[in-house]
Image (cartoon, rainbow, N blue to C red):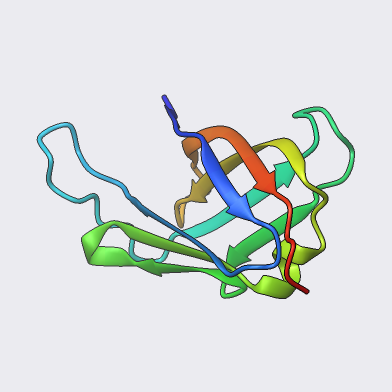
Length: 114
């Protein structure tokens, strides 16, 4: 079951989110060779994403520690209109098993300095 976690993204600024995938006993899950994808959409059922990140393109996985580092550039966040969106982060095992780790709302605050 995915953890619900709401985030704030400052439009026009670099955005970081770190997620650690742990076992119920608190030890990290080894996610070596996994891939990850994150999308942000106006509504969960929207046809197009306002931001799409994937392993090697905004998402870095440190396998043995279970750490997933997510980064969106200032250029990427500047392209998102202010407002409330929905996002989730999914990882895929080498065997093709997809797990949604985190989901929630993403509030994009407006940029004033340009």
